[in-house]
Amino acid sequence: MTDSSFDRTRSAGYLANHMARLFAQRLHERIRPLGLAPAQFMTLLELWEEDGLTQRELFERLDVEQATMANTLARMQRDGLIERRAHATDARARTVHLTTRARDLRGPAQAAAREVNAMALGDLKDDDLDLFVSTMRSAVERLKAGDTG
Image: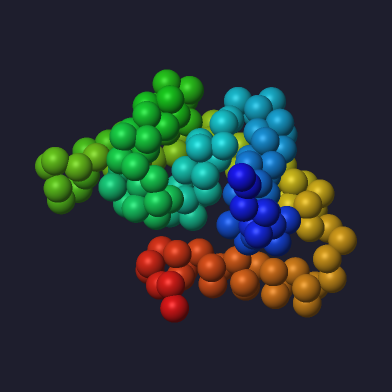
């Protein structure tokens, strides 16, 4: 017997997950010709804002597992997007720096992301878009905090 009281078309969690997968698929289609994968793009977004972060700072900011971040950075280094350097004050840490190639990809990669956002949300009026994004941010922050009430 199936419980039909759950309507996925009205479930914020289901829809957010589905939307995230579709966003990732469409983004991947657009950044693949640039030689990028979505995980690399997310990492580049952080490094374009602040070059020279540590691996720990990156995985904390992106809210991913340390092993996942290590694998992403290894691929990025292999692909000539980053280089790692000794940390100035912590002998155990290394900082992650953009290469010229990665800096040159900023414009085209961010344009691709804007295209995907416009595809998904282009029909929304500015006020509706602001409310949608604000609501999403609030949900993300509540989920990070573990707040259920």
